[in-house]
Amino acid sequence: MNTPALAPLPAPPRGSPRGDRKTSARGAGLRAGVLLLHALAAAGALAAVTAPPAPALAEEPSASGVDLVVDGVPWTLDPDAVRAAIGSELGAGVTLAPAATAGRPTLVLRGEPDGRVTLSYSAADGRRIERTIDVPAEPDRAAEAIALLAGNLVRDEAAELAAAFGKRPPEAPPAAQPETAARPAPPAAGGKSAPPRGARPAQAGRGAQAARAASSEPLRCALPGAKAVLLGADVLPFVGTSTFDGTNVVRRYSLNLIAGYTAGVAGLELGVGVNIASSFLCGAQLSSVANLVLGPARGAQITTGLNVAGSLQGAQVGSLNVAAGPVTGAQGGVINAAIGAVDGAQLGVANVAAGASIDLQVGVANVAVSDATDVQVGVANVAAGAATDVQAGVVNVAAGKSTGTQISVANVAAGESTGLQIGLLNVATGKVGGAQIGLVNYADESPFSLGLLNFIRKGRLHVDVWGLESGIVVAGVKNGSDHIHNIYGIGLRTIGNRPLLVSALGLGGRISIHQRAYIDLDVLGYTLHEPSTLEPAATIAQARALLGFRLFPELAIFGGPSFNVAFSGTPKDAQLSPYGSAPLGSDASSTERAWPGVVLGVQAF
Image (cartoon, rainbow, N blue to C red):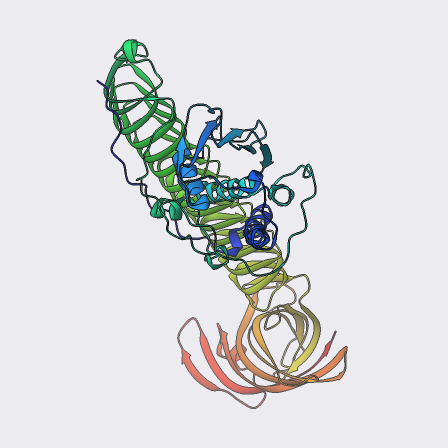
């Protein structure tokens, strides 16, 4: 049976603002156009004060209001939200109408094949003007832009607007407008004065939500031209109540056995097989096979199989979840895909998102092609966009301009800047602004790379030759980041009862105290080998503090105290100090002895 109207369903809350970091260049241009609209409105209001009495062409709609005809607009636009926003902008009643009525002020909103919209205004006296513009992807901002365009069309100020919003040039140049303060707008219907246009708060996200708050009519999930019914039940499309009602209906309660097809659902739809809504969902769809909404979905889609929505405000729970537009809420399933911004979360085995911004992805494999990706947690995480905040997994790859934190076995950041990488293998093709901590680190530039092997393309590289009090002379390489370096060297012990080959490996840090002076704090391990067999004879662990002084830009001398501990299989091989050492311990297999020492050396490059 039929009902005259559907009860309102609450719109789900919008996500938090994403910030300037998540605004695309195209979005910035659109916002600039919105600011221009406000300026045009203000200039037009002043012109109305200073100009001589104008003919009927400049008159705004009377208290009786204006009709709005919506024809094939993008599915992201809610016609009722656009109606409310235009009503707030004009300060007059706006009525959704199926077609234009002769002699009545009418706005016609028409969708274009390339995604833009055309808005035309026909005045009661026959005057007609239209403009085609790009609109933002976000429904609220799109409704705001259309409402401001409507106001300027009514006041015949739209040529500059089209230049700001549209890709095509304006049809005619606008008349010059005086750049002075705006006067208050004409009184709205009912005798109440509208606030001055210049006093409107320039806040993000105004538009449909603000217009709804100001509107006397509540938001309805409805479709112009579709019949609203309380209950519908089908075995198949046109086999059931749709045999009599047709499929161009909006159902409050919908029951389907094998498959059901409606224009929209504003309530609850239950199906054993497949639920299909061609225009919108406000409420919930539950099925065992699939839920398909070819327009925006506000609420929940729950199934064991496939969920599809044009855009999503709410949740999708199923094996495969697909949103062909922005997602505000969550997708939970085996595979989740969103072809739009994700202001919420994707939770699944495999998550794919391609939009302006991505909040959270948790899964085995996560892929984000986005200007801004907040958090990815999974076995394999891939982010290809301008900025990535956090990746935690086994393998992390970020191919954007900047990367915040990566924690995994292997981290790769192919961007201009990287904050923190923690893993066995860390690779940053750009500059590391924070630190790399791992077994092997590579970076273009880095202030702090801590690992067994560090390769910094634009880092420090020195050739050192140094000697110890124990008769060991070593030549080696010191390379690393601004403050951390690795030391690799080979040498020879020339004193004692026999010569011994020496290998050295160390890690240290540098403190610059002057343009010519620095302090190095290092820990090293020396291994002494028999020349003929290369078997180890002894090992020395050393901590040293060195003061260096640059004689020339490419040459420095250094020296300082050290503390040494020798480990050997025999007491004789552990006695490496020429002036004696203190025993630390001894057993049948090893001997440890310690002594203070000194290091002197020279550094090149």
